[in-house]
Image (tube, rainbow, N blue to C red):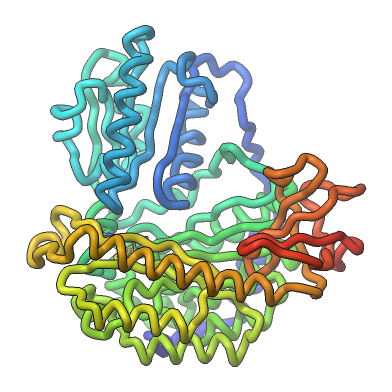
Length: 494
Ligand code: SAH
Ligand code: F3S
């Protein structure tokens, strides 16, 4: 659980990166004047897909495309897809049928599939779904102009080549559906972990880290445009490692200088926190096996790093963790939790859990529930196991837990989480917390909605405050997941 490499990281390098990135601003217009064609782009699945769609929109904005929210008027429809569970794929298949209905009225409309399903199914997509003109994997978006030229000439086009270098670090994303306050910044791509249930290493390829300088530049640029919160994104952010480019697995072969000036995730967090001391910084996803104590220490050191850690555990049973190839034990997970609680008592912790992994017994399931009791997560994302073709579990293990058992176990997990979420939410009662206002409350146009540093949603009367303000809110009441309060003034961050 300790830092995997002895990084003799130099403070001067950090100062240099911050200095070099202070100047310069790239102007990205949501809709570029003169663009004639209309792009309808839709994303399913994880935050990384949403972030990738912003990169795609940026590439296509230089190809004459402006985005539209009206499917019927689109010249090009792109769907960024998710393969993580079978259900996610079925949702996309259904959506393709809906595009097909529109295409019948507007035969000139072209349809492209991006993301993980494109990568997993490759040419099969063109065979199976006649409506699809274009198939592009997550590392091939820069090839879109060429692929679209082929499509324009009436041919199907496909590029699903995975890359060892591509990070899109040089592309300034167009912010789609933005509230102007919060944004995603991607820092790593791919994953090398090979959890046996997971399709991501196959669809998103080898893990690579993005140049910290380009990350800080993006953060600075976002701040200058009025954004107040960023989420650093990666499948496994804690394994971020920059030593001048190259795959993480080749770090051992790097030169002494490269090793001495390498930037790990804790360093990157610090770089971002210092570059914009008022910008709220979040990150996701952490993987327990790569999580190091210096990340917790860095979080504790900087007020603007939000006090929330998404730390998927998947199962509370040592035997199942091993079958899943999650490279930590239950005890090691507890020691991370203890360290977080010791160094940042107010930190919230959330989970991902899978019910019904092959061979899971009632005892394994009880272990998951008892792990949850130990941590008392603030919230979580909970799933039944879905066998994915090509993964190790898919190839080697029988999906032997009956569907009803999976569902019952999932229900136990969800009920327990609900109880814990309520306990955690109530802990905010009668306290004054800093909220960043993000949008109007869904329930009332007289109220704002925003989040605390620990990622709990709060609503309160609008008064004279506006979106993007940092406000101190006194919490007087709550539902199971939402805080209700009244603003008592701007926070010192404002
Ligand atoms: N990189 C993250 C997770 C990415 S996938 C990590 O470190 O854990 C998001 C979540 O989907 C996973 O945490 C897992 O809980 C769930 N998931 C992945 N594959 C799954 C499968 N085959 N069946 C059910 N849930 C799955
Ligand atoms: Fe998937 Fe495990 Fe990576 S869940 S994304 S293989 S950390």
